[in-house]
Image (cartoon, rainbow over all chains, first blue to last red; front, top):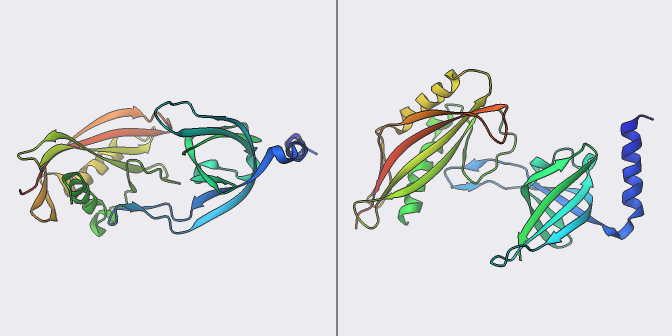
Length: 117
Length: 135
């Protein structure tokens, strides 16, 4: 077994061992990512959902003037390959938007999500 | 329709037209994150920063970022700027109800490698406009 497969297998084990600390979530993306200038709106006709397991690393509300909650979530990179195509993350009944920044080491992805509450 | 929405409607009518789409330049507005935009596209921003001849008129800048592959030379950006000129310079656009947007002459500056993606080169195409609303 190569190192890449070994690391991914250990990641699977880690996500299994943390049990309910990891949550089921859905990565959501629109299938037609074009902007319609005639209608002055983005065409988001079809949502495609990709199931992932996420571990919420951090949650904070840092502004006194806004009810913005930010979270940092960890997920396996192999579950989504490219996070940039996704718009939002649904955890339970709550939909979070991705902020423009995320980082990945090729095995795990740390993504920042936020929403107004 | 208010003056800001009217300005936007006039500008968007250009980029929503079949004639512009036939130019083959992928076009996106500000505050829209394109997916798989490729290595050549433009981003349109309307900056209604000035006053007008009456309370429902205004003026401003149409700022268009032109993204092309870094290292490919300036020519493609110039070609795209010329295409934009054909559709904008000296043109008068109207979204109806006595409201018109008039564009004057354009300018292009080379901004260099894109900050977010240095594999792209960004040029800035800027054209002032006046928007007139009838009271």
